[in-house]
Length: 482
Length: 96
Image (tube, rainbow over all chains, first blue to last red; front, side, top):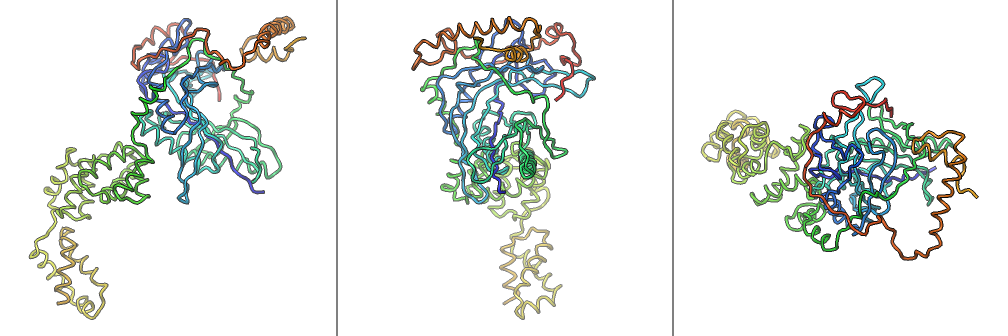
């Protein structure tokens, strides 16, 4: 039978506020256990939550960025369940009246087309603490520093039909929250987490199949793998006549398999009700409009502008705009050297390759935009060739330099890399090469034109890459074919 | 007529992690059903077009400025806990 895959994602984005959603405790990552868990976060008797306005503002920014309905009145509800990392025995969340209503985002498909994925809603809620099972016998250690950290849970429609589409959607959401600055999107630190609902149905059938929920998958790569192994598992069950049961499953990246989370088998019954400790959250149309005015240029708009204004290809424009840090870097370099194509080639080429090799994000690139600008200017004015420039780039990358635009110049000077443009000097190298290769000269002169590459190579080698390639070509032709 | 039966009461007790004596269950069935009957009287009111209230007070939430105002008080707070180690609160083993 032909099966169709149906995927919906729930993405938890940690909002980058200084303090927690309902208390004045710090949200800074990596503190000593429980040093950032105050009486409100611990749920001690008599405390009251007070809502952080910045969490509201950042949630509204996200909603506006995906063209969603912003609800002027939203309400916090209690989601009741018992788990030791949730000391109140309920999580404050939004069920009936979320802050963000229906919206959508467009993802890029492999064939170059776009597909629209619906966002059902996005609601604000508090994070739970952390349970540490490893270090204690018959006991679990609880760190409540993370309890009360503001989250925005973004719920998609079941619109995705493959693991690849799910990853594209997740990347797009990641790009949007990073552009907006509403979250640092740091997956290692848990600021961006994803649950995936996966089901299969016979192709052509309207009704959805029974789904399994994959929990807390913490990298783009694992999302794709986890969904794919889950699809295989369900297909095996269905093909052999069995039925998939609705359950929560954990992805084990080491074994590349999903397995049932037994503790959650008990049917969920959260008994939501409006939190009596919190009043309705009201935001006026004027306030929403004011927030709208603060939105930065979003990736899609930026991509269109790069194509229309700077004449970049769609491929380059897309690649440059996914990561806001890369786009900002690009714009700084592009404006300074006034060469959109050269800046794009370098940033998508050498700079990205080097970052990938070193496992670095663009924001941590050791060569800053000013340093790259200084380097590219020297290619443009023919002080160095593109090839020598790579050598200078690697030197700056490995820490030679002080972070200024003049670093490239200093390295070119120190290493004596300045391009040879003196005709006399190049001619004398050419004369040597011709004298040392009489055989090739004869062949060339009898019509084997391809050998020009050999001569250029020899001259460049003899000049240690410093001769100007254009001049070398020109002078060689003059001397070989008088 | 009872709204609830024995299994409802057992389920509610389980969700609330309350231990209920078997012999007390019939009484809970009766009392909780009576409460539901009482609340059900509200169904006779025409509430067409009325937005559900989220709170008995006709007021809106005040927003807090995003500032860190709490200092580390772990030592004091952990003095209330039955058991701690390495700054962590210890609880009976919870296995995923």
